[in-house]
Image (tube, rainbow, N blue to C red; front, top):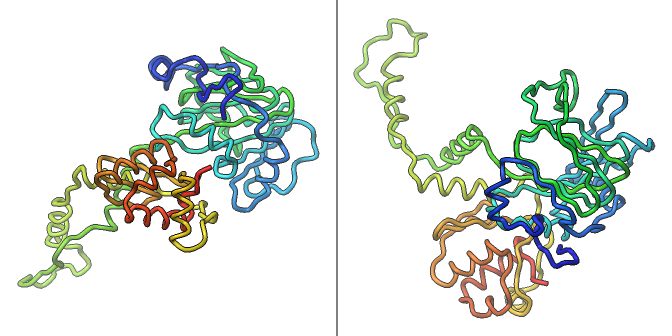
Length: 374
């Protein structure tokens, strides 16, 4: 959502090139008046937190004691201080939060995770901690004091339900007012404390570990693995030790496993499916109804946009839509690339598309993967 000055970037007057060169994964950045305010109220956030299909947490702190409850939060604490409500995936339910997520258009779409919005009563926070990913912290309402530390001692306080740093000693701080944004690189110790009742939106990023990526790749490869033949031991001698796993079996299986190889094509197909797969908690329920002819007419008139829950990625001629892979060529390839980059196609672009592409668009609208344009 643009500010009154027409900005559609959290970076203010700074160019994406300068931000990526001087700040990204290097050092913090504060931008005053980065975004519009008052696009969500505490009561709206509380209503989302009460739903069983939305991930929410409630954090309470009192005299060094921390308590965390997970799941739907039907009621907020009666106490006036020292508690925080955190709601994940608000971009899936709020058009304004989705626009905020899409504003980070200078980074690959697969890097974006979601928008978490928190409400904190005065004194509320989650303690000094580290995040293993980049984060943009936008103050939506109220005021929050942020402190950072470049300390080398990253020991966590034992016996707590949260990962809270022990001996946090800040060396820099800022107070964010409504509309202000703070960028923090990964693994920088920080703490945010509410000065008054405040709403903070957090744009998180995806950064899978190589172990996680390798593990998921092997799961993916196992689903399509084809190795011919079956173990055979014709002509073997009588077993001297029936309980022993014999060398012949070990050699045979090792040889087949060692012969496996995974080329670039396999890696691309895995990454496309893995990075575009919706989270397990995501369901598509806002679907266009009616016959294909009527749906196509609406699409040609109004255009289409990706549903907030949808991810469309591509590499060369391969496209990955919510975990499914397909190929496209010619004009359809150009249209799909535009849809992946900008998340919208105009009615005119749909009208000029082939009947086969229009038919596919109708199916995606019926599935809820696409929505009609505004």
